[in-house]
View 1 (cartoon, rainbow, N blue to C red):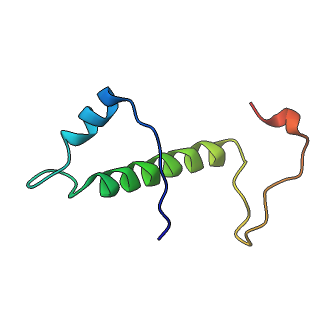
View 2 (view 1 turned 45 degrees about the vertical axis):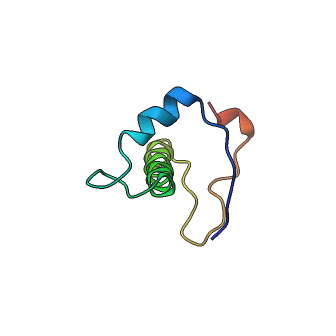
Amino acid sequence: MAKISVEVPDELLADLDEHVGDDKKFVNRSDAIRASIRKTLDLLDEIDDRHGRLADDDGVGGDDDSEDDRA
């Protein structure tokens, strides 16, 4: 598994930490951040699907229309 480094504002980190620890939603910060990334990607996929921008199942990108379609 790859490791990355990101800068997070103190206020956002404090909010995150309220959900991390024993008897809370996440066991550690990494678990919370991975869950957040998954949720965000799922939401972006739903938006792309509504706009017909999801890639085909073969792993190749969607339609090859001009970049002007991106909004």
